Image 1 (tube, rainbow, N blue to C red):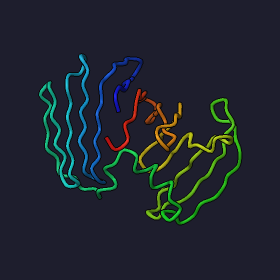
Image 2: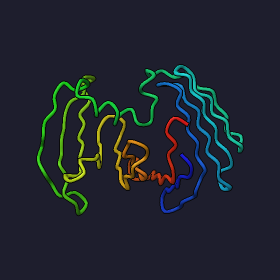
Image 3: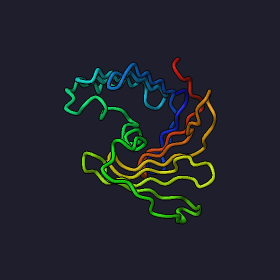
Length: 168
């Protein structure tokens, strides 16, 4: 990722973001902006190290499984039918002024989830359930993949990506 926009309660700041994923649970992230300084995190599946230029450093033992540490893990789980105890089509509904196809289900861990898809492109528009709520938009083709260049986590966090570099 190159540039992201953080927005919280009407205040926003841009940041350069770089995220490396070596395997599930093993990641490194750096964020930099003049307003925030630099924030670095490293996880190895068992421990997370956080370092910041403003002095908020922390080492934390992780108690979750490797997969639960991934930011997209809830969505990735929801894309594999093998992770579901049940899955059903709920119909077509207008949501935020656009028509979407809604699918809901129960994951093998008992969590309830709901996903909405664009009826024309078949791309994921939103996900609600285990891990919170995610909204996706501005899909663009990167290599052989359609990737969302806009993502919202809940009501407060909004990412706008300017570039993806797969396997860089």
